[in-house]
Structures are given as C-alpha cells and as structure tokens.
Length: 347
Ligand code: COA
Image 1 (tube, protein in one colour):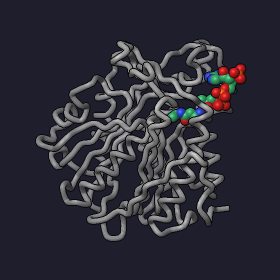
Image 2 (cartoon, rainbow, N blue to C red):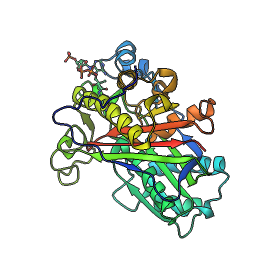
Image 3 (cartoon, rainbow, N blue to C red):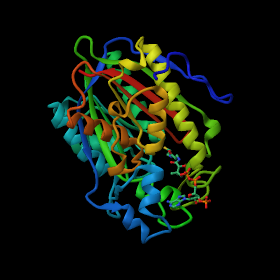
C-alpha cells in the first residue's frame, strides 16, 4: 500500500530539503556506460576469503562484479562511458558547455578527471570539475547540471559517475563485508534543455556529517593523507548504514513526490542506488512501489558507487522500460552521510 501520509521519522533524523525545479527545465538525452571486461563471481570470491555464493546472494543480491585490471584509471572508464553517452544523445564534444564528474575513487588529488576528459574528448573551453559526495555523487552532479541549464549558464552538460573502487578493497576475511559488495564501472548522461512538459521537476539533497565514520576509506578521523595511509581500504558499519539507507529512500520518495505535487502511484520507475537488493526491496515495499517499477541490476555490477544510478537507468532504458512522459525517480545515499533524489518526466 502506497504511503499517503508522511513516513514515521526516526528521532535523530535531520529534516529533508526539497526544491522545485525552476527556470528552464532540463532532461537526460543520452546515456552511456562502461564496465571492465574482467568479472569476479561470488564463486571466485570463495577462494579468496571465507564467504559463499549463497551468503552473498541472499544477503546482498549480488552475483558478479566487474573489476578493472591493476593500473586502470577512473579517467579511462569515465571517458568510455562519456563517449557512448554523447553518441547516444547525438551531441558533439565541442557542444559540451560543462563536464561534471562524480567519483569516490579519483585517480589522484588533482587535476580533476573532468579536465583530463575535456582535453581527451575535445570540448575546449567547457568548464570542468569533479565532485565528491560518495555514492550520492551522480545525483548531486545531475542537480548541478539542472541548475546550470535552468539559469541558462549552459545548454549541454556532460554528467559522469565513474569508479575504480577495487583499488580500495582488500579480499580478506577482515574486509569480507565490503570486498564482496563493491565493483568498478562508469555511467554518463548528457543533460540538455527539455521539451515542453518534460524534464526534472523536483530535487531533494542533503547530508548528515554526524554519520561521517559510517562508510570510510582510510584512517578515521585523520583521513588517509594526514595519516600517511597509502592504500585506504573501504570499511563500513553495515547494519547501521542498512537502516539509514532504507529510511532515507522512503523519506526522500515521499518528500520529493510532495514537492512535485504527485503521488507515489504516479512514479513509473524508481532507480535507486544499487547498494544491496534487500535495501532496495525493503524501501520499495514500504514506499508502496511494486518491484516491476524498480530498476535493479545489482546482480551484475555490485555497488559501483557513483556509477550505479546511470548503470541501472541505462539498462532500464535499453530494456524499453522507460517511455516519453514516464515519471522517473532517481535516488541515492552514501558516505558522508549524504543523500539525494531527483524526479523527472522522461523527454
Ligand atoms: N561472507 C560471509 N559472511 C559474512 C560476510 C561475507 N562476505 N560479510 C559479513 N559476514 C558475516 C559477519 O562476519 C557476521 O558474522 P557473525 O554473526 O559471526 O559476527 C554475519 O555475517 C552478519 O554480519 P552483518 O554485518 O550483521 O551482516 P548483514 O546482514 O548486515 O550484511 C552487509 C552485511 C554489509 C551486506 C549489509 O549490512 C549491508 O549491505 N549494509 C549496507 C551497506 C551499504 O549500503 N553500504 C554502501 C554505502 S553507499
């Protein structure tokens, strides 16, 4: 049964900020994805640590993840996905006004991946930068693209989520709760002014730094650099993050639907951050959305942080599950803690 009143809010939960899209509306016009060819199955992991295909499948829904060869750059995955998105949107690189790359696994402190892509793709003069909002990064970046188009500061924005998270994984018993979850991959979207009626309608973005230590890579509280931690390893408080994730998906869905003036039943496709099938399923059930209206491809890629939403959206579009006029809810959460959701009417 769909929610008709505000969901119960946990006593420590922060209020959600929602925004109606204003100005010139924007929409997604082309998607591109790229994942490394090498696949690590659950059965492969059984020989690296004490785990089993059954445990991973039942606890997470993940069957495989794509893992980059050592030495692979996040930049290279990002660029492959971007080229495909530009081709799908029939947009030339020279037409791109801005490139925003969301990543949790940059190749280094600076320069940005976006600047390197600007040169590689041939988008001279476009403004280019990376953002860090962990797994919520792709939604944050989309919202920035929407703002640029709304305010007429840009007509064509390339938004990318790309990760080589395997650099920060350790395939050992100590880290089996994270090693089995994450994978590598990239997804990109071309954002442009929407035709009449279509485009992003509302946003919900936020963060709760009190949860800073819940999903980390490297020393807490110093951070990897200050601690001279050369290979930060991803760690997390799994059960705590699980509860936060279900809660924030439900609250965001309700808040954004209210901001956009629609009801939950009007959502045709929910594209959640793919962190754990059980999180997605529990949230969808409590929101009141049947799984036929939820995009899930976690079995193939695992959690690719900023890349999960474009990967899942791309696969849903490729499968013919999204048509013009459909209302699509993109929603994420991640380290920080952060969260973000965007509601759009497909162009
Ligand atoms: N294989 C086998 N057993 C494992 C395991 C693995 N890969 N990982 C953990 N376990 C074990 C634990 O050691 C624990 O054993 P114990 O009871 O003997 O101590 C048991 O499984 C239960 O651990 P717990 O952490 O409570 O499991 P869980 O059911 O919460 O599942 C996660 C663990 C990580 C899959 C789950 O908590 C999760 O997905 N959380 C959300 C994380 C998330 O979304 N992170 C991304 C943020 S963007």
